[in-house]
Image (cartoon, rainbow, N blue to C red; front, side, top):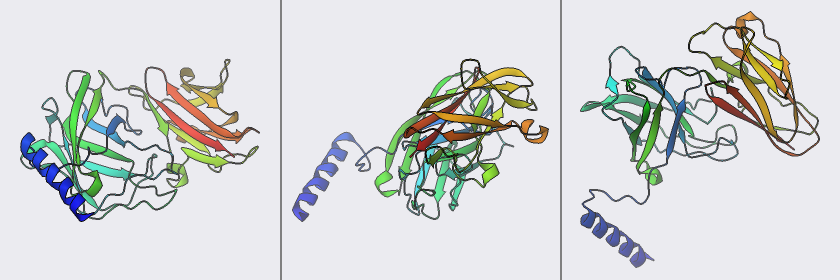
Amino acid sequence: MKSFVKVLVLRAVVLAVMTGSSRISWADAPSMSIGYQPMVSNGLAAKQPFEAWLWLDKTTDPATPGYAVPAGATIKLHFPEQFTPESGHPLYAVMLNGWTQGAIPAKFTVSPEQSDPRTIVIQYNQGIVPGGVEKPGLKAIHLHTGLLNPSTAGDYPITVEFSNAGLLNGTNKAVVHVTPTALPNVASYNQLHQGLNEDWQHVQRGKETPLPIDFLVNLPNDSRSFISLQPAKTGGLNILGDGKIIGSILMHGVPLTLIPEAFGPGFARLGIFRIHARAGETQGVAEIVASLDGGTQYKIHVVVE
């Protein structure tokens, strides 16, 4: 066995020399997709400060483990020259279990690289260890930078490099989809139940989900619009902003009954609305899909047992 391992290492070294590579990489780093951060509507808009969610290639189902990250690991995000460094904007990151407000209490630093302000460096001072259904491990990163998005809408690749990260070591590409203007944005909102995961819930047949399902709406040009719900003629619910239809809630999969809960103006004008979901008698997975016209959509999963 030892001889076999030595042969593999020797072959890797020869390949590295032949290709001019300065390091051995057994695999690519985890892939990432980049989407609108749930709390804002302008994070990927042209000429606005970059703020987004970096989704790792793991399902949001908390029963599926995320990534373990060893202490000392580094992630470098190399943005292209079309992104403009600008002082006065905060730089911060939040490690996430895969749902909004589902923060991991990780110890890390985030800073621009001294030699290149377009490279953002995340250094883990303490490891992240998956710890069960409510702590599945790293699945997403909320990142706010001091970089301004390009002035022209389009797709811009960034290079993501993991180092000192064990099996995660390597590089990969992620694409930033810059939009011409800010988009209406909708996402789940777990803050009203202490950040617990409403995105994937298990429920017995005929019962209501353990947590109510809250959504947050951010509208780029009317941040104080009164958000409410009404039954839609074609099924599901309409999302209203100041009484006008701005989006919808549809269901797929096994049947659920959705019951809106009326919020007072305090929550409604913050863009928050709530629904209660009651399972039917069919086992399986249901999807609740909230969509805003001309904007984003967000999926909630309910597993009926």
